[in-house]
Length: 115
Picture 1 (cartoon, rainbow, N blue to C red):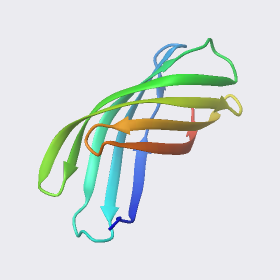
Picture 2: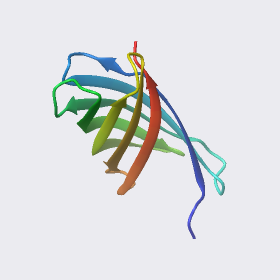
Picture 3: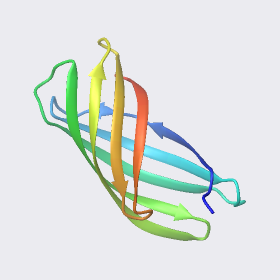
Picture 4: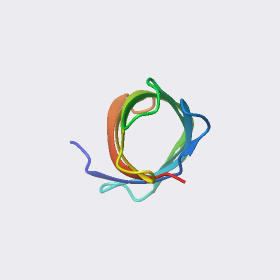
């Protein structure tokens, strides 16, 4: 049977340069049929594929640690994302990444505040 899951993530993005951004991430997961909380801690690396402009695609590469119940795993994620700058401080983002622990693709949609 499939499990219904809920994910909440906390992210902070820092633009190291015009072409490279880092994103520390903590993701909490809980499942309806399990009593324990799973979490994933990672450092996402975003490499922009174009010069700075309103709409920019980027590559995602991350190494992290996934903790599930009583066991922990090293996790690697790769993917693609698209960043759309709404104004100087806000951008909308959509990304799809593949996770080596779950062997599943994950879709993320979000709004980012740029410091």
